[in-house]
Image (cartoon, rainbow, N blue to C red; front, side, top):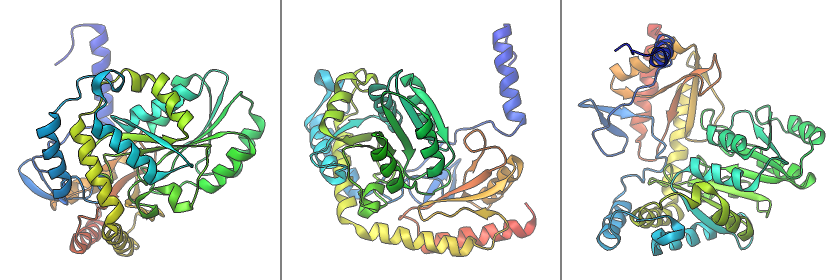
Length: 394
């Protein structure tokens, strides 16, 4: 409906422009629990869209832990962590996460309601106007927003280009310096060169902030990308999310105790936020036990990744190099990406089309997300239908 004020009319023109450019987003209502098959609009579809990489979102042990916690703790935390919202399950989970990830000797952990809030906390609490943040150009939006809100000088370097970063750090000043990077890049699936980044952090007396949203639970025997590379340092501030491979919700930061205490005392997105329900912390403790013990989930996921890459290798679209559950097929233009995604959905397979501004212009893609909950036959079905669509000229 056309708005009656110039301000509303301007918004509506912009929304029309987005729609006509193929960039409008829509929400799909899911009518089932998470799993390899979802109910969308009354249809059962084979889904390759979730970040539930280990299939824990509906795992019986995790569901049972949440159900038991409801009986004891209810459904709400009631207040922020610093008032009366920090329950025993929160404290236990933080101790478990710190010991599991251990980015440095004696590390502590602090939980947040989302990864976005965690990254805002890290950068706004630790960096300020006199500092410099050096960020990978393909970092997640929350790292970019945190850097900008910190008021530090914000310098981007070319994606995973260690030489470009070194040149920028040599030229840049700043009281304190921060190298900020995704560990596994959410739209490309590649892994940051963390050993080289830590080397530069040591050479320039800088912090290394690592967003391991897509590596925690999957890489390094589940402990994440730092463990994958065998890295530990007091310079590392590590963020992991808990709604992806861990299957539940929230995030955590693990680092030197002084870093964690600084966040607890000063990070506005921690201090002024109601704590997540204790039942989620209890469910996450159960998920963490599965991550520690169930290596078969990661082994299955690794096999599925290899099978997909073999099956998709000769498609006419570019399959980016990735050893992670994120498998991007670069289609190029927005219209073609939408057409391929729609053609798959017509075959009862859901793979989302990712478009600008989430990815650079000209790199619209299908983002195939694999889960240990998928069967080998599911991957075979996906690759067969992709080949059929390619032959049809979609």
